[in-house]
Length: 611
Image 1: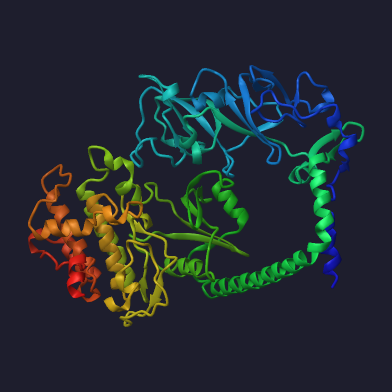
Image 2 (image 1 turned 45 degrees about the vertical axis):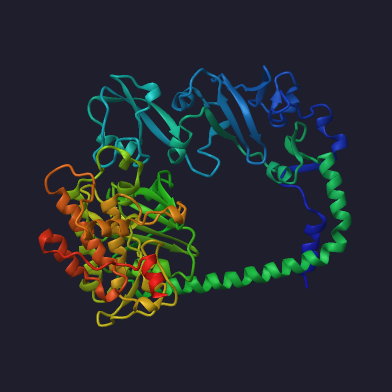
């Protein structure tokens, strides 16, 4: 059992120093002469590598000078002034500073902060987001990009206009280099600035800026144990000074280590066994994925390496979004085609989500299904590379705050076109492939829109393949998103699981497109919810107007048609739902030819009568 002395070595010696770092007792440390200090009771603690300008040079490093002014801790940078220190994290090597100038303009604060020839660099934010270099442009008129709603949304390498730097005839924007082809002749570039795009709007009204300093050898391990890091000018190396209070805590811990050592050792053994089994499981998943990729070598998607991904995404500098699966980054292939790289960071199960994506999208080509251009798989890390959809997902057009404006983001004619396009994509999955593909997660978030607002179905992680002759699919558990899952997936009492389950999800989404609201809002108390499908059914069955936003002749007819088709699709009995070819026939036909469907669901009164 050679593992025992190894484990007890770490139990009895919690800190063994680091390379080029020595450990000394606090009785002989430098803090007797350079004690940690503060400018005020609630101010940040000042100690190595920082020092007050009034302290000895040996108390800190060059370029880390601070001073006290009116109970504020002021930072002194070579070419910047007017910044005071709000917080210092010696473990994370980060310092939060505030602009003392009379401005709430964050972009102005970043511009005036000159980190040239300093020991500091700009940190994107405390959550690991990287910064990108943007060009600042002066424009004589406000710009509106038709693919987005101006710059009020984060996205696609454009920020602005910055109201605090703009006027009636001068508008300031920040643009990534790859987007400058869209800049009109009335704009000119005049500065560069580092910005963390991901949380820009969250922080746009604050003057706080987070910067970090370069790591010093050995300091991280020292600070992590609650000790102080210092510098020995004689040996030109860092020193770990034991905190006296921390030292007493360590002595108490060491005195009880022998009595609890057995328990800790037992727990470590269990942990090692767990990690060993987890490692074996991960190896099985890797072998399964590699076996799948070997069998599907003839698929069109290209396999990329991790270094390829870094080149494609520019070292992952432009994040488009983030979800439970991981993050999506914008990139560009070597042939110039823009792409979206989806990093699968939080996969569950045995690799089925990744296999489903490659096995389904990789083998099919349809105008209304997003194209998978490539993938990456190495160990436990995986990624998918899709064609880039500049208008993002349908969700943001029907649920965003923009809906509170006077006009709908999309016209009724455009909504009808999107509904027809999605129906054609689902029909192809159900009828046009060699094998029938059941998506099981049709929802607005998984419908992407290209530059012409043509819809593309995406995210096939929950998909299931079956033969066209197979009318019933066996399922061990419900899959999908709450609010769009067909009732038979929860309870077989409603019927068998089949392609009609996708029809139900499509119908729920269709009603959300009509009402520009979620059918079920889980954030609202259940007793106060208004179930929109039931509301719209009552209106339609009574022949009343829907009272929706109608702008031109024909809009009311389109709205009613979408509503009736949606109500047919969400019938609780799967046999009463239409197939997707029938859905297309209804959408492309006249309103007069449509019948009002039966009530799709049982109300609470019906349930009481049944009981």
